[in-house]
Length: 202
Image (cartoon, rainbow, N blue to C red):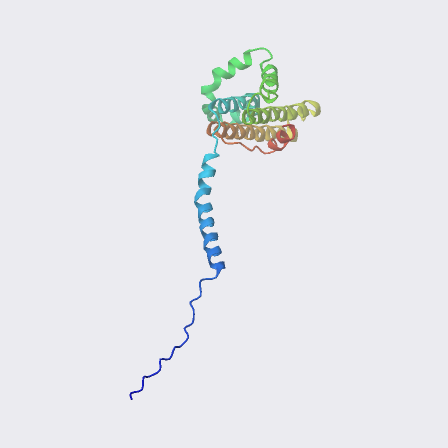
């Protein structure tokens, strides 16, 4: 009688499913990539340009300290007459400004009360108008000091006066150009010695 060979069953090792942590890792990576791709959209949506009216008010405000500070350039204009050429286009406007009685006084309070303290306006023109007002106040102090101490018309006193006037003139023109261009572009100008004082008043 033929013998039937016995079948041997070898136990097979069951296949293990991936650990649940693997799914959590994939889910975390998907969420991270989603946040990375959606972040620039939220930034671009929150960008608000400065209105044209606010930029215009800010740019005009810087003419107040500029007109009042041109007097400090008389020594430079006398020594280098060609420096007065870039200012010739605004001479008619400057002459009109100086011909009006109390023009500087009225303009100063118009900026301060009408713009700086006007809460109906945005912060941008109010801050720039305040910087112009603070700069105008700072320009008055050297003239008061000069009248009180009277450095003299010759010698070291005259040299000190010339240096002071020349430095103030360059500072005023630099602040005016920087403030004017920044206001037109809708950027906030940060003037040395002026911005800190303006921030305390806002």
